[in-house]
Image 1 (cartoon, one colour):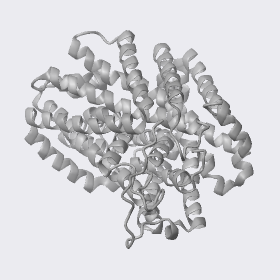
Image 2: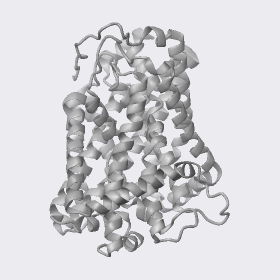
Image 3: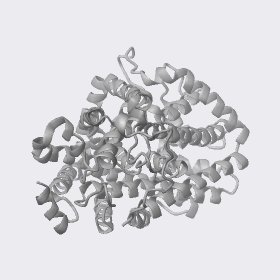
Image 4: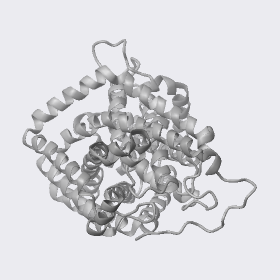
Length: 533
């Protein structure tokens, strides 16, 4: 088997046995969605609503279980296992490492949910609260923070220990889910049809999710550009924005983690911090600080309630909170394996505890701050009557209200430009990480020793872009978004398998004894070599 794969490495950049079936299945799914968009959307929504009604409890408990699993791995003997040589330092500093994980974990979605999710909830609040009331506003921002909290990032990171272990400790050449599960199913399954099925499921979820993200991220930029330049939102404008994104994330993916993804991620942290200060100084800073404090108190007091809220006693209808929470966890599951694979790739030299806790804490903290500032700005503008946020969201949609809120600030054009730049970089870092990960996953080179070839990164970027543009043009994105949510179901199985595989591999190798940092031995001061082909 090894000889055969060795021959393939010389002739192919990409493993077509898993990439081609995944791409063809995504295209096959998209064709009926495009031809019968409205009917497809109705059927898919009906399926999804059925899942929400019947398995709402399951998604909530699953997210809670993953948090518990993360804490178990972090604070047990497994947490001290070093992902690589215990005598060498991590590849990135903690700030660089956290910045990359934040940029990957949040993406441009934080700009949208932070700004307007509170309005969606205020219009349709939980717990019998009156719509549009001050209590509903508080619940809205509390819920927006809850979306970006421990359950979400536990979903993203808990397959990472297994993937990082096979790459940095066992140094397996193929960086795949099937390889991580070899310890469970054995060689025959892994090298045969079963292993290919696992890898194809992973790629289907990532390819469809990437296309949806590129398509849904465009309105965040185009609506603000429309306000800034006083032009209409057209497909041509969307195409221009998409092309710019493609150039950015292709260049970043081409340059690699060190020179591309890391630099963009750290740059965006500084830009986001500057924008936060801009809003606080020129906007209602005192109100934001007061409201942020109150929202944090509400979140802490009601965290368990939101984590387990199913609205079971209301037999006739659902509210925004319970239906959106299930969709949120389901949609995040489609990205879970991608986040874990990428986190595993950049975690060389980190312990399992450092990897998990950094992913649980750093993005959560940043997202709470972002939601507090952006949500606080919007709510203050609504309360003072400067922007009729709830009616705009109800009549025109949430994307339309974002430029209205930003334009209420002094130096409105500056605010719009900075917001557009930050959102663009956030989406770029998400997509270049996606491109890089797919290239690493489908490549035929030894990923424990090298980076995916640059040519392959560009090919993957081109495929994702073409798929997204076609769907945006012909109207297939809304149903594909629901399909992406449905893909979360098989990902749950993959995730549970990798969690079990991580424990089994570490136990077999007794890595909690042999692959840990020795307190009485100095660490090698040399950093890992930065391979970036």
